Image (cartoon, rainbow, N blue to C red; front, side, top):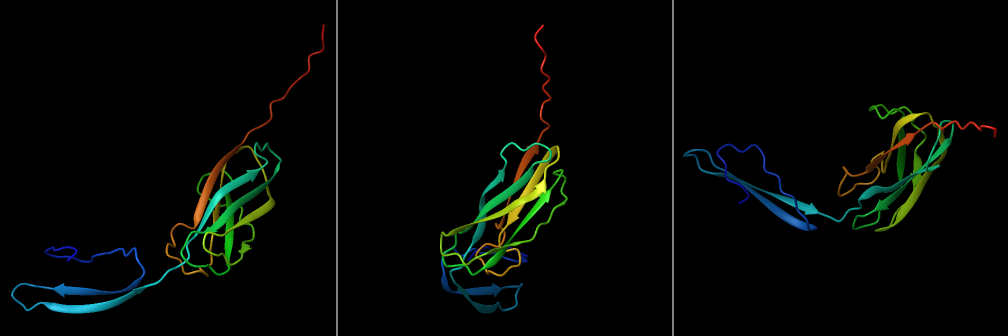
Length: 171
């Protein structure tokens, strides 16, 4: 028995193994006879797509640079993942708005522990400030995953103005 309470509304259990299980629910209320039901649960192996190793180029962008953004999609699940699509979005002022939404990239099928690098070349011309980009795997939900809540990764970067150097002639 997982829990005994006077007025439970729900009980959650996380199964870490694959296979078939039977959940038995017993409801008791006062002097009435208990009600009982059983539910069969089958858990199977699934892929799990994540994004890691976010990069931007140039490494020290200045205003006016064309920036290239990349991320690695990895299947950390226990079975192969079918093809999916990967999204990039840019928050120009790191204020919670996604201002730049380039086309999604097609990500091929990935074996267990396989990776694929997705790159958006010259996707945005930089401006001074603090910016954020986010890359998300399987944005269309094409792959049924063991964890649907770990598909995105983000990174913050800054763009600063170049110092102005003035050459002073020798006196």
